Length: 210
Length: 176
Image (cartoon, rainbow over all chains, first blue to last red; front, top):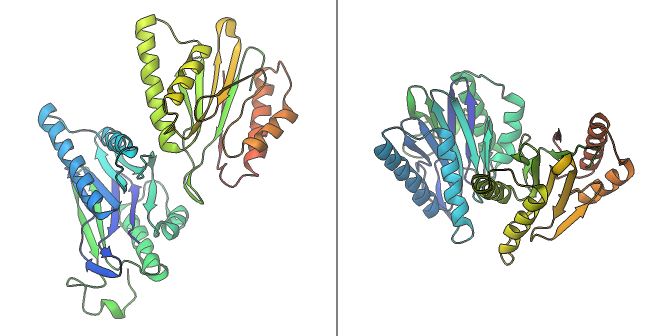
């Protein structure tokens, strides 16, 4: 039910996720932020067991900050991805974290990069990826519409098409999404796509838009 | 697959979760040193973990012995590391290929708990292993030169993975 997706463009990476917090048949909240800003130039979109998701992403964030305090330089995106995978792999055969992660980051030398890390610690560098039931719809859309070196508008348009498809075709689909971007200027929230809740526009439910 | 003073090691490139394909550029064949390669089929996370552990052990060996590991030694190391986890195994089936002394090719495979299987001609592993056995058996000839070996391995790989829905999406062939 939870969806996280990511796309790499020209010198930026976009990570988007739904913002629903669901337990059984109840939607607790529709503005749960699942894309954590790890540091100035990294985003970690996570989906999975709610407690594990928050605990694990905060754990990674704090360790990243610790590294920066100790060594005065931030960890690269690739190193962060491998560190995350290491933590998941170590915990896997003891007390696994049921968290799937899309890690997006920008480094001055490597440019923008995106990493797919699933809950059993499979790490792979990707250009486009998605987790959850939404991925069944998103991945093929991305295969068709993605091309390397997209602009921000094109990438967000691709994400919007994915969101539209999820809303339309997934039973019990999440309604609201958050889109965050990371580029040379840093990691920040780019947009929200709200159909329900306090921040949704008044006529959102009566118009079919992205 | 073994050739004349050379070997080939090949893999497909699919990374999938059951029926869903995640990526088509996943690396499954890893270098240990210039004349020793290991291919790890099975669970992606265990392939990555196992590869990291083996590189670590080989680097330590290089520091202590001041030389590269022989393929036979490395195969025994892999077997031991896999059997350590006998009752909680790594879900990987390795294929090891290397050139020993005098550039004599060495290949072997093992199951996920380290039962070594040496061969003189070819070894296979993975979800398409039965297809691969058939294809390799029919296409293999002893003492092939590198160019012919490459053709043989490529054709065997492609025809086998085409009959397996969980394998494919590209191939990677390395000749040493």
